[in-house]
Image 1: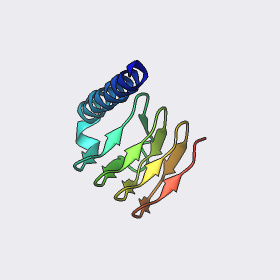
Image 2 (image 1 turned 45 degrees about the vertical axis):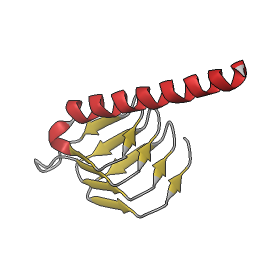
Image 3 (image 1 turned 60 degrees about the horizontal axis):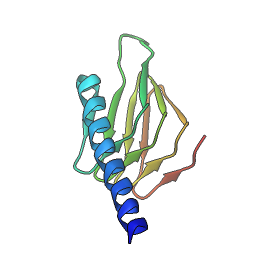
Image 4 (image 1 turned 180 degrees about the vertical axis):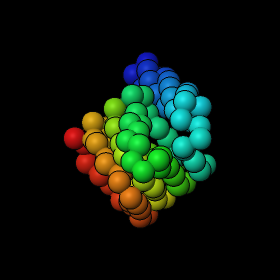
Length: 110
């Protein structure tokens, strides 16, 4: 019984931490980010701006998409992550013009 309770406490504390990290990310990068319902951004995700021709990066996360820990998104283009898609931890995404990742796509760690 204690093992079951412990697992549930850990699960819910991780969910709460992810919600908090998503809101912090959304506030930090407010003019450049659009998150739909259920989109999650975990701890350590960063946007690196490369100002090319006075353009800026634009990030769109569709419904139930997820960016795992310590992902770096860099560049000066448009990046969209489709519904139910996932980018694994410690990945780097470079966007110079436009990247659109469709629905139900999984990108591995590293």
